[in-house]
Length: 176
Image (cartoon, rainbow, N blue to C red; front, side, top):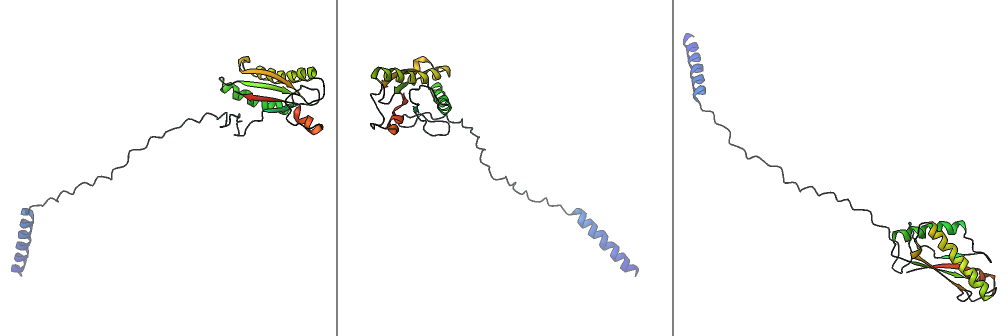
């Protein structure tokens, strides 16, 4: 048994010597995988808000909601007083004119057929002046506004009844 033990010890020593003399093989270098190329980040372009479009292709003024602004203002019989609705609408026209100082507006005053020619011309002028005065008080230069009175000469409706007369008592803004 002594030999068996000796044999086992010799075997272990020989195995240890062989293991100690064995060269360690370094692992082959693995190619380093580079991450897939990432596209360069696209720069964020902040586009400025577009300027409000103040006029459509027909030259009509456009309000902040994109609707065409009415350019006709109606009056009561023998009156040149503007309603609250008219004043709010004229404020929008004033904003359009402020942003477009190169544009001009002609304010035409009109009347129905009742009254004398002279009276209707004077009333039409008062109606046009009421609008021009409001625009001036809203900061619009006098160079941007002109007024003209047509009295009863250019009716919107050629009828001879209250419905026609109501349509003819007006002032109209003409943009240039």
